[in-house]
Amino acid sequence: MEERQHLFSLVLPSLTRFAKAFPPLIEDILTLLTRLGKVAQAEASLAGYSSPKDFGLIAQGIDVVGKKKAKPEVTTAMSEDLVQRVKQTFAAIAEMSSLGKKAF
Image 1 (cartoon, helix red, strand yellow):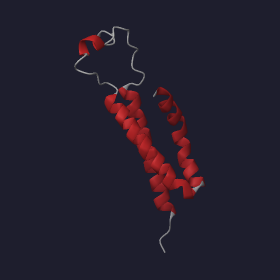
Image 2 (cartoon, one colour):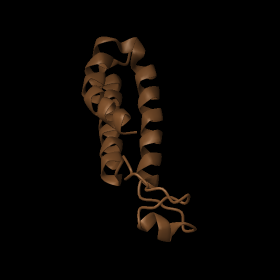
Image 3 (cartoon, one colour):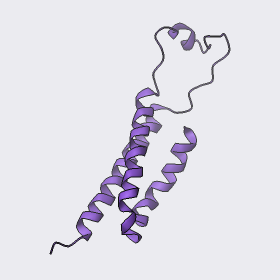
Image 4 (tube, helix red, strand yellow):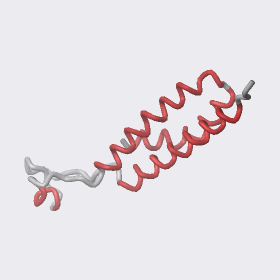
């Protein structure tokens, strides 16, 4: 999860320029952004979730089997930041594509 957020945080700014350079690919780029936005939103909503059944053990950092549980890789703030970046990129590309076409 952390790798995905790191990768797309670096790639998102260039997608706007890529869409401008290759207008036929705008629809595919917007589809990619839509899917990424859905995944990032799901991660943001689940990042702080823990099962009520095992809450006492998880709060102590112990897995149900009794092993030490690793800290969650993704924080809610990281996921929400990626969601906002995806929305901004989507809006920039949509605005650019709608303003670039002339009505006849």
